[in-house]
Length: 381
Image (cartoon, rainbow, N blue to C red; front, top):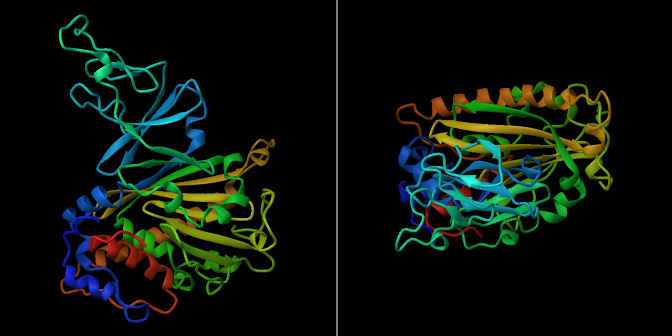
């Protein structure tokens, strides 16, 4: 059970009504600092997507990632094993590495007082303590954080008792054919969007808006196509069709890559859009995989790291250019961010009350009810 969120609990009843009768979340949940602090403590402190395993492809590489209200240090040891540690020195709590920074080394060294740790987290030395009475380096290892590598992505556990297998229950059979381990990131864009993280996920969960703001998308994918799935884990989403002439999502439907091996006939002609709570938007295309990783900065600001990964053999081909995919989604992303920022501004209008969901917004309903149950202090189903 979570501690209930600092929102009007009576207003959550409208969000939790059956689909077709429900409303959006209370408006304060998108605007209040106190709510975001609660979300970081309770929603962003479970299993959180950090990035691609390839970011730490070699032994002795390390990187710090945001995790809940703080950060986590991820290290690949000389044995090839990825380990996670709280990003705080056991001396006075200084960050071992600035969040989002990366480095390489034979040891983890605190930049403040130079306490040093082996790559397995055990303390090597603390300047000035040699021979000190009542001081034993064995008493001060770094605190560990559970880490999982899953289909080429890194995840860390900020404190939930839920096994990772339950978190992604039902996703393995969807993602497996896309050869996540053998994909290589060809390009990454970072966006700072002036909107609450939930507005961005809600936008991702529906194409009700596509005919209004996404002419490029509608050219290659029917906006009313596809179905949402019935998830078992902490995720939601569904597929959309490609038009008959389109090989992938690009400005003219053509692909400069290759169909990912092992995809079945349906997967070769559809795109799967999945939101893995709380911060990963995973878009599976016939020839590439796109991810959006969300980091809430403030109630009205979200940092989004968008990456495009392709089969390794495609990326290694001389002259390969990922722009056919990147350009399409950069245009589409920016259309979405403009809409999300307008929603964020509009919700600040005095007297605004969230409205009902449309019949095409069942994916939004899945997300809203997930968050509403958390706000009410309930574990996810």
